Image (cartoon, rainbow, N blue to C red; front, top):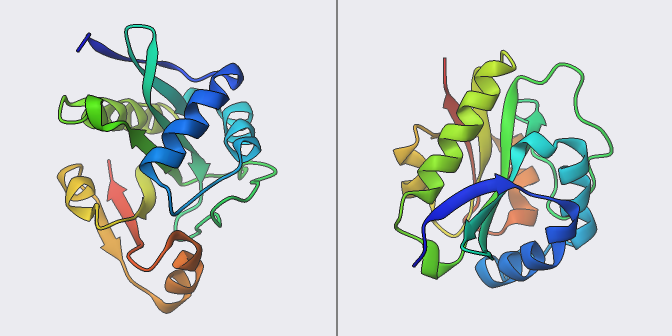
Length: 166
């Protein structure tokens, strides 16, 4: 496999992003327009993983507020005026590109992005029992009844997770 590198994700990459998302998250479909909105609202947090000229993964994140989970496949409309976290909406990497440190590179990128913005937390939702991966990056599961209701659209194994990056 060629060297993997993260580059800015562009609206014209949506067809590839959609194919990757459907392959990696078949039970959690989202419309391409939802991904496009996130790219347009916060291009700095949206990256594509390249192997040569092929997109083999994507990372989509944006400023958000802690303990608030955007429903799956929904439009944000706008970003919060005073965000206190970067929300890692999706990190999807094709099987052929896994195990090469790409997730760690993307997480380091968004941690630095958050710190540059004066934000000291990352947040997200772990699906399909992937918490063990997120734990490696310093995430902890947050449990509360209100959050559990909001997690329903992400499937039965979904867990809300937060990482303190101060």
